[in-house]
Length: 85
Image 1 (cartoon, rainbow, N blue to C red):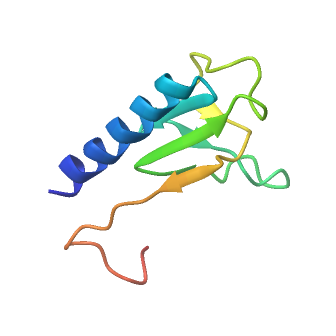
Image 2 (image 1 turned 30 degrees about the vertical axis):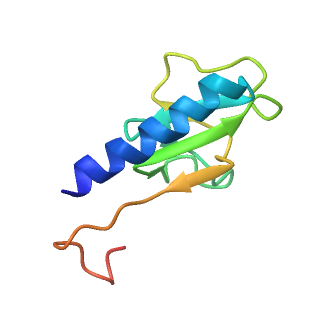
Image 3 (image 1 turned 120 degrees about the vertical axis):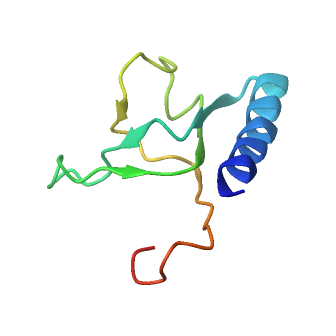
């Protein structure tokens, strides 16, 4: 069920991003390198959004992004433990 919820949230973000053309929505496959002092420390979320102002060149084919998202969504499943999240 967490995967379905994440997909629904991504679809809503993607629809709004396409409608306004103000940025891009990303599904769970994109990893964020948001720690300049530790580039190997990657964070992945269920869905995310980056504004056009912060990512003017747009999405690339890379699976990693060094721009932190404006919006990051994580969906917690029943199997997730608090300490892990």
